[in-house]
Length: 342
Ligand code: ADP
Ligand code: MG
Image (cartoon, rainbow, N blue to C red; front, side, top):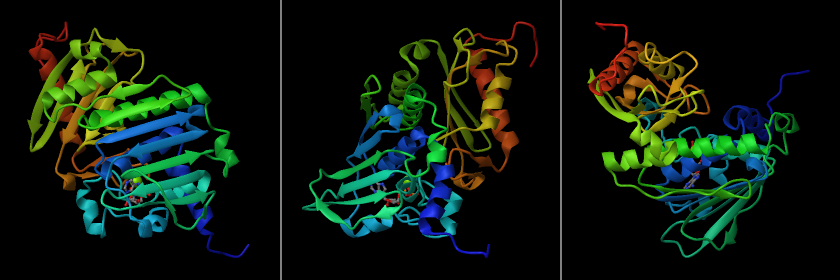
């Protein structure tokens, strides 16, 4: 075969392989967009484990009708201007890939109205085919509906894990991101789940802890110790559970870097190391830990899903986490039984 340039739809479907792994990734991307748009209220509805429907409605800044075609085009973003901005990313999104990727593998509708505008507008993308912009009644903000996820990529559809597993992955994704934005009200409802409603919390430490309790359960709050440690300008704060309050898996360990939920092996491994003498290897602490670091000392542009980070000085962050957690537990009178000195 000769070398050829792939069609836009094929390119988007390939990108979707990384950005949209499962329904929970759709929820994550759409909620991130709502938060980047300054929403204070985010409503999520799902059906069929998110494969049938994901709908995310927000009261954020909206998109002008003329920009709707750009919003669903690849590499179009309102969040960065040049690669210089990559040094210090403050928004959750920046790659301009989520909406075109979702539109390539599902039926996407994007309806939006800017708060000052008289009228809203809508655009549809079905398996990569983009409609014209149509006037549409809309509340201020944006409603994104995704139906029949992976209908255009049956190979991926086969990897879906079943309604229950997909719905619980969605719940987990919403819990994680909700912890990073305590002032925002999140509701998650649908035919496939019990409704979650996280009422907005204050913009202080108490509000933060209240939101953590909403996400990880009130028991966590009663069995957690606070920590706040700084090393060379990097701050680690949040809560970790006392060793006796543990789980058989590590699903309830939430890590955030500059407000972004991340799944970072190094942070998880540091947490494990901090509890090494306190917990059997098959038991795991619960945690909600926030790392604040100069944007230039961390790279979030590692993977299209934006859940991985790379620290310029991983040893510093690891040491801070292990030291910070041990110190917080020691403050609460919890020390490894065997060791005298650290
Ligand atoms: P990114 O978030 O990386 O910019 P997306 O494909 O997720 O890329 O979104 C493309 C653009 O569409 C965003 O940059 C933003 O301008 C606009 N957009 C998407 N969702 C929303 C929303 N809920 N509210 C306002 N604007 C949105
Ligand atoms: Mg986005």
